[in-house]
Amino acid sequence: MSDAAKVAHAPGADVLTVKDYKSDDKPIWCPGCGDFGVLSATYKALAALQLQRHEVVVVSGIGCSSRTPYFMSTFGLHGVHGRSLPIATGMKLANPDLTILVMGGDGDLMSIGAGHFPHAAARNVDITCVMMDNQTYGLTKAQSSPTSLMGHKSKSTPYGVVSKPMAPVVFALTNGATFVARGYSARPSDLTDLIVQGIQHSGFSFIHVQSPCAEFFNTYDYYDQHVVGLPPDWDRHDLKAAIDLALTEEKVHLGLFYEEERTALSTAVREFESEHKQFDLATYLERFS
Ligand SMILES: Cc1ncc(C[n+]2csc(CCOP(=O)(O)OP(=O)(O)O)c2C)c(N)n1
Ligand code: SF4
Image (cartoon, rainbow, N blue to C red):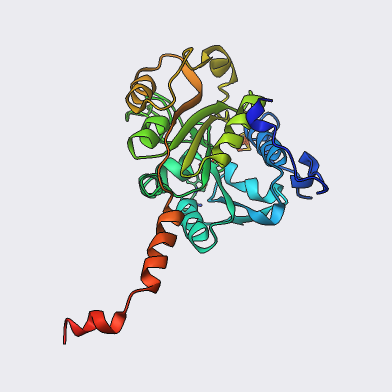
């Protein structure tokens, strides 16, 4: 675990361990599902940060990956398909002190929920979005997804996918996300570090996780052979370099592509509110009388 993941707890406070973040519901995912690695990394990240369970909410949509809130002892909301980002945005505005994780699949976030994604990124909503990308719809038994590769044959595309796959890292970078990273479920320690950093980042953090579906689209061999770290001396503040790399990668790069400081939505809104308190509505309305 890196230094980023080693966070001291308050003296005298009970130390929370990974076990404390587990719920009594055991994951019902298929053996070998990549989502186990993501869940394990999430428990470890919360323990590293010593976040109190009542201060954390895990929000999801629908899908195998979206079952995650059941397996955590934090607050959680298993909502409707594709709507985790607007739900999380409302939660964060209502209570900016919450740590909010949005967790779901490539179908949930890049297909039915894709319309919400650019706006959450552009508004810089201070949440951490962890997308478990298995390039298929696991829950509904193996239809193609927006990240399925061209030619991929599935029940919904028996002759092969004809559209170009979406590139989630490029999508996040080009829409204003202020923290963009990629992990691999079979590298849970590195993924833990990324989730810790994503939570610590103030603003919209997107972590794209390659998380194979062991049952319907087993890509472990492919990713084991293709994942590499970011180039040495990578400048995580260079947006153009991050986009160029994400557009042209032949290997699948893991790590923090990009980070930027920008005022988060909940902070900006609180500033409006303090101005609004001095606002004299009666005087303003006189202009129209
Ligand atoms: C409005 C609506 N449309 C379609 C569905 C059917 N459905 C449930 S999960 C899902 C896709 C899940 O894919 P993904 O988000 O990638 O999750 P995975 O199961 O692969 O983890 C679909 C299409 C639904 N539940 N609700
Ligand atoms: S169907 Fe695929 S994504 Fe769903 S639990 Fe099984 S291995 Fe995981």
